[in-house]
Image (cartoon, rainbow, N blue to C red; front, side, top):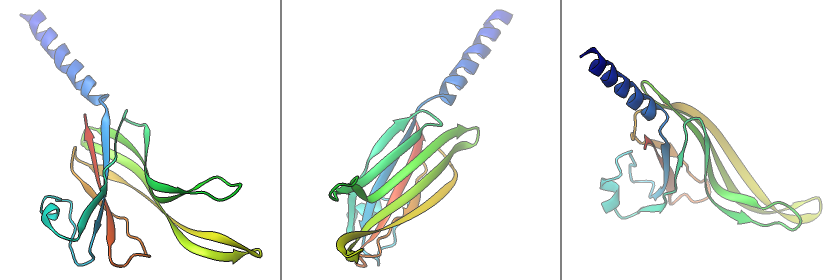
Length: 166
């Protein structure tokens, strides 16, 4: 009887360790909505509203502690230079903890501002905003990030971020 009990405890410990090293899935839904619409982490009622669009929903699975990079961008090519990624980039590293999931992230928004005269030449101008953030969440509980653009005042952008164990 003692042997069976030891085997059961070992099996439970093994399952617990397996869950500890399971993959983590990160999904970043990019939502655009009219400024008069109140966007929350519950997307169900938003799906039925006019003026709300799901623009992109990239998803990536990583091992705990591995940095994931999600880009919702387009390339702006400039002669003789590396292309500029215009749009949203999200870098995130998530870890499993006994209390849930913790994350360290960096949100970066790069916008094309237009053309300007720089050193006597007409050149494109870009504005980049970078916001680091971190915290903890429960498995599959969404986080809402304001990803607004200063150019388009008719729409607000949000990232609906979900981190979960898989």
